[in-house]
Amino acid sequence: MSSKHLLVLLLAVLLACGSPTDVTETTQETPAEAASTAGPEEATAGETGVDGSAGLDAVYAQLEGLEGDEREARLVELAQAEEGELSLYTAMTLDDANPLIDEFESMYDLSVSIYRAVADTVAARYSQEVAAGFPGADLIGMNAAPLIGLDNDGLLLPLNTPTTANLTESRVFDNWASTWLNVYTAAWNTDLVSPDRAPSSWEEVLAFDGVAAWEPRDWDWMGTLVLDHFMAEKGMTEEEAIDLFRQGAQDVQAINGHTAMLEFLAAGELEMVASAYLDTVTQFMGNGVPLEWQPAVEPLIALPDGIAITQNTQRPASALLFIDFMMTRGQEVLVEVGRIPASPNVEGGIPSDVDVIGVNFGVIEDRDKWDGIMQEIIQG
Image 1 (cartoon, one colour):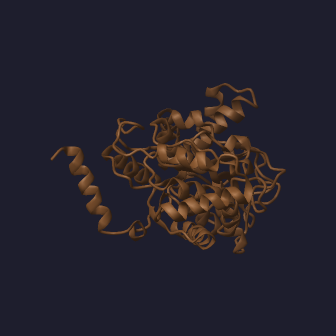
Image 2 (cartoon, one colour; image 1 turned 120 degrees about the vertical axis):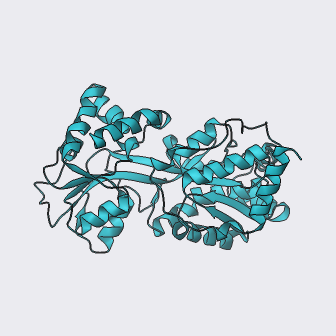
Image 3 (cartoon, helix red, strand yellow; image 1 turned 90 degrees about the vertical axis):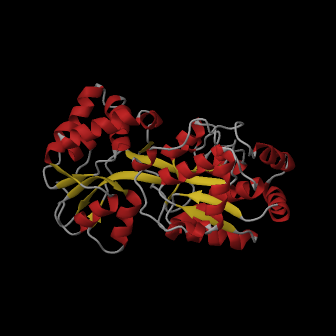
């Protein structure tokens, strides 16, 4: 038996032993942790025994010329008549994913199975399945960092749907689209930080005179601020901008985990955190915790989570229908579970008067550099 056939057999046995929804949920990773996409470089489109591109092209052909309800009805018909249970691989926590799945299944009478793990594990499993010619996932969802890696390896199929018009152009790509946003913001404890001490710029955040913390894995936040704020907007050199972080790090605590940072902040053990997740801050505030992030330290930095159709999908109509759902009704469900929707047209997102810039994808591509700089700064 060849090694390829053996790997296919092993994967089949593993999947048969337990459904994806039986996978134990693990802690949601930070965007920086998820930037590594393990998987063999040879696992590219057209080099494996399973290729879903022809099936997706056929679905697109069936939808050509259809709009609105007529297009949706045809897509539902194709999914219900010709396909089985949709398989979603995701890094989203089950607490957030399950309400989306429940709503989708209720709307379209279709079933969805979930494999959930941290993003690098999801990406590695999917890459290995493609290399083995094993059709596991139909859809894959995680933040932009690993999606970019999978896309660069040719493992995502072209995405063509009018529903992405609900997003801004910067959040739609050839082979994937944004679903929700991880938004970095500074936040402070209002019992400890008076309005006149609250930072109003990133320079003041980095030079904060008080008990502050950074997440040492937020190299994407740092790199984006260096390139797209301090250099592009403030006219600094790269070394001058990096030196702001180097000087600021001398007096801060390094705490792994954005939720952990906010728990310390809520308990009064910190006065300010530099790169909190906005959705978590607002959840804490909604529970009566004395935190604040406004007036916002601008620009906020947004790293999108996204969704894509896999290169080896066996259920292209169902996969496309789920993406259409995520671009429409799913955006409202995301607000209901406390996430920040990618669509600017959905109430509950980032206020329209707050300046937001996306994480620089060049920083993600050059992870080794920026992660190395952050570790040198923190350790130094």
